[in-house]
Length: 223
Image (tube, rainbow, N blue to C red; front, top):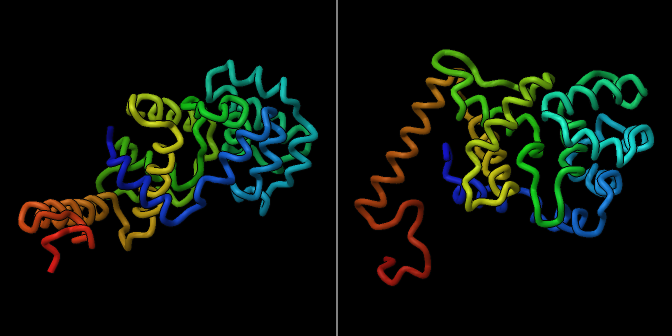
């Protein structure tokens, strides 16, 4: 795997929703459109997209049928339909990908083919996959290309560890993407330098002092 999932997913749990909203919606509603209504604000889609405008122009059966397609084709088709039916102003990826995620996932089965997607996950992909390198900058927003979402989906499936739940992996990518986006760095080379310094600081502390991040109150040798 290209990332320390345990570390970055713990960073997510410290800063974001405690998972109760997502889990409750997935367990309480079996229909993807009902899940969408329950999670629209949680996903932060309500600022730009009206949930009723979306959920009244597509059906649960339609979403289920689209999940059988290749992810890029499914997202492109749903995006086209939402625009043609007046629910979206422009073709995009985040909203259709989220609807397909809800249709392809269960209460205890996160869809790796349609992972939850946003700008921070896209930044993580751009860095970890080597899509951006050297003096290139990391993206400032999520891609609007369904084909590029297909690349993200393929990356997610290939790098998801067998022992890790898809939701946990997505949380790790989210927090990592958020972290590197906040760095005062203009290029990937500068991000590399920062992360290498961070790695060195952690490993040096562990080797020298016996702890990587902080000496906790449970440590009997604490000063």
